[in-house]
Length: 140
Image (cartoon, rainbow, N blue to C red; front, side, top):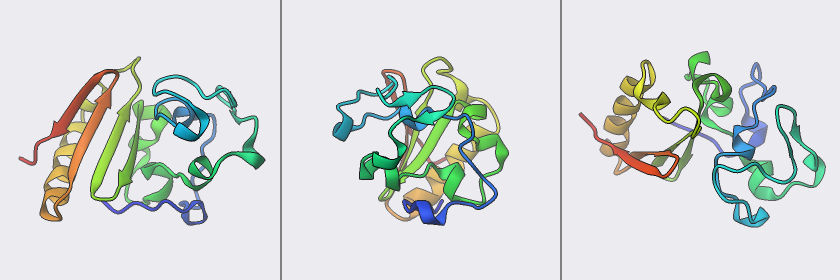
């Protein structure tokens, strides 16, 4: 799975819409924001109240659904309750703690195992954070 971290390379037909999972799921050191809490600038369901002055971490970030045209609409974060992104050779999946087993359902489970096989071939791996639980996906 190839992912980009340049907002200029977003899939043109896609938009964040009302999704604010990137304002909720990850920890963001620049904003002193822990994981699984909304950023103080987030207007839930609407976006960032300081969009024009947001830090580079936020400005440059795109989830996999926004940056990878190969991911279908099943991977739209507010639909699947997960946010996927790449950090080097690591594919990270952050699961909405209100839906901790979302990643275990299909089509997600099979895709995660396939990505793990592909990542392993390149020295990488897939990791899933679901609340306090951490899982490394095995390449079958």
